[in-house]
Amino acid sequence: MSFLQFLFERHGIGNDVYNIALASNEEDVLDVLVSACDFSEEELGELCAEYYGLKYTDLKCFSKIPEMDYVGLESILVLPFDVSSEHVSVAILKPNDLETDDKLKRYLSLCNTTKNLSPIYCITSKNAMLNIFNEINKSDANSIDRLISDAMRTLASDIHITPFQKTFKIMLRIDGILTDYRTLFIGEFQQLSIALKVMAKLDISETRRPQSGHFQKGNIDFRISTHPTTYGENIVIRILNKDKELISIENIGFTEDRIAYLKHISTYQNGMIIFCGPTGSGKTTSIYSLLEVMDKKSRNIMTLEDPVEYKIANVRQTEITRGVIEFAEGVRSILRQDPDVILIGEIRDEETAKMAVRASMTGHLVLTTIHSNDSFGVISRLREFNIPNSLIADNIIAIISQRLVRKNARIGRTIVSEILKISRSINEMICFGENIQKLRDVASSGDEFRTIEEDMLDKIKKGEVFQLDFVLQ
Image 1 (cartoon, rainbow, N blue to C red):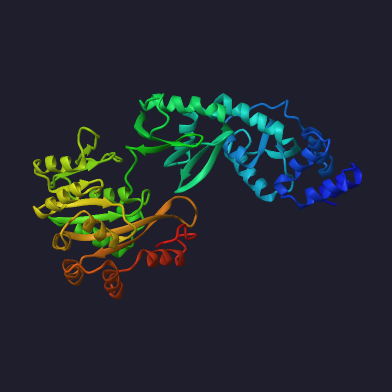
Image 2 (cartoon, rainbow, N blue to C red):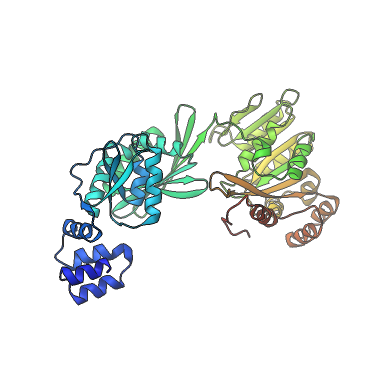
């Protein structure tokens, strides 16, 4: 007998209500029953407890358990509320949910207070549970310090705060995937927004124009960006740990032959090595890992970055400051500093592109990034910046296109990539202005060029990547 049949046969719900509830989604059944019947949420919870043979709790005896991850518990709507020597009482809404049960036991095992205790389940009402979570939220979980602490603990790269009509949602980007963290009432949004703006030295009265700024806690830099939306300002915070240990080039996902090639070209005295891919594709990590294998004692390595994401010993790093120093102006200045290697964080405009090419022509090895879908798109972008085909062909050593995908164990990410080496035949085709499709066809017909799609499929076959996280185009 289902719970609906139990209510129909023993507690007198009508045929109409029974049919409506039967046709509704499982998630909405209780809401349908509350709105269509004379049951209160508490009464319905007590009936649910009777049906499943469990106790009912109104959670008035709730006490917070030290070290419990209430962030994760709210996402699955279960609430541990009382601890004894052998058991922990847990309020639930949906009994017999095996997936939720597995997740709960994981959270209990991670908490020192409950890791050796067995759960005893009790039914409660959704309203009572949400009220408790809301009180927890008000006390500490929506504070900026707690938010930042949880983001750092989960190794999140970004924090997203998005307002809606009645609520606002906080999400964390973990291993490239946006993950729910908290949903709070909209009334609390303004307080959080103003506090963040004050920390980042933004104009708290300006809500109609985008703003950007940053604040620092210890050695962690938080880059904040606001953007106006229908219901208020969308806020994104980028987390940059400047003391984070660099990942070696052997451990970020390149195959052995590509590692050997990248190490080889890092010894060149002049030319351009260009990394491309969308935001968040790991370009900065790759380019830094290449700097790390260079001889930094005998070579003067200088950088222009926006922002400086890692601090590297024996490298002269400069952060771009709008209105003070921009990329093109910075390259001009660096060229007077007797550099051997120049890292230009990103080529964004024609002037910076021309300065980068000029630097590579005058005896400097230039490492840089360009936003492009693939390695061939970089050639199109440079043409758009009015760089002559002959200079593109003669100065580029290689173009590395990459993406980040989740590892098979869902812990961390790895690179999938392609490397376009400017061979003699490719050089001649670029010089003569051949179109991008012709370049792609010729490169793909050879043995040396393997596309990013092929690299991805190889990693799937080897079990290194658990699924295709994006559609490659």
